[in-house]
Length: 412
Image (cartoon, rainbow, N blue to C red; front, side, top):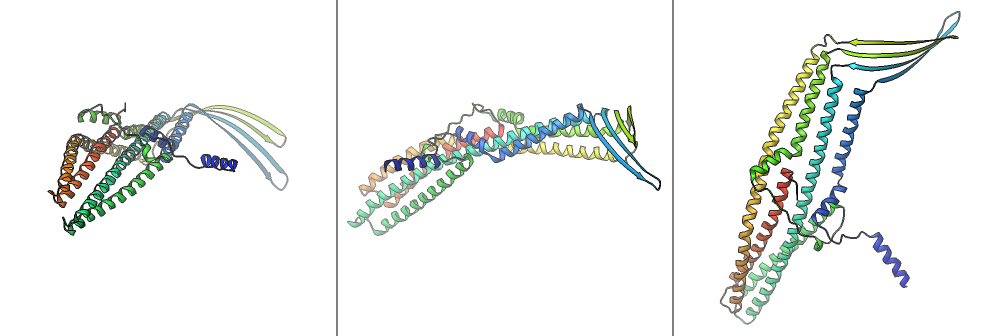
């Protein structure tokens, strides 16, 4: 029997998913980065661009080698004649109006674009994890506040019911407490449901289960305090801006490459051919310099260049619009940060006052020199003060996380 129980325990331990013993925000971020499908998608796109760059390098630095074989049989009334021709051609471009060089530079810029896009995607994911983690911590403590509220009201209901039993208070006082208690219980159920959802949301990101009580607290620090300094860092570091700037650079090289149609193309060609007719075999080796140039194409080159210039100008507008949007995002996050800092100090003081007010109201109620309504108000003020403290406490962390994402400030 003991052996059987040991085997069952072994399978439970090894086959059932085990929640993480503890989880901090850095571990959550690391797990999410390794398991994100969105991030993998961008990594594959980066790999594609790297291969495109190798193609451009091959077109610039290497010749082309082609083989061709022709088999021919001709039949007339008198005889059948046959012939085979095999040709090996080596071609190397000496000049094509710098089209290949500009194509290589354009692909290099596009590689930088994808690298910055990958970085931006990673930063978005990190912010999403921080937001989910912070909100989960806040909701965990909000559940505790809801539980404490129910306990206080249950105690008050017990006292009020006793006062009613001995005829000290009217029945409507008991009903007031019961209504307030019912509301508190509904808030508790809602808090539990929200907490469960938020935990599942974070588990979806990291691909692991964890115990809610094992979450470690977060401590973010903002080393740079002034808005202007943060703005300068944002304009210098933001990946989306750099991606657009590199895309703009790629467009410039594409335009220069399109101008290659105004220049001749020069190729050196070496050719070795073997021909066989009936029983005779001949070979021929040749080398030649080919120069070709388009003299007129119906203004297609000019119009193509103008179209590409218009596209490049649209990118300039995108960059300007993005800078304005980022400025507004930074201002919003910065104002949220400064407000949460100030409001947190006020909320701490308000909580102390609410606790003292509740203590006094409770004592006065027991002595029957405080009304039931005032006692209920004291409990409501205490619960609200606890909630406000949580909102501002975690609001500071959330605002810092947003500022770090917007500016891509290096975390220390």
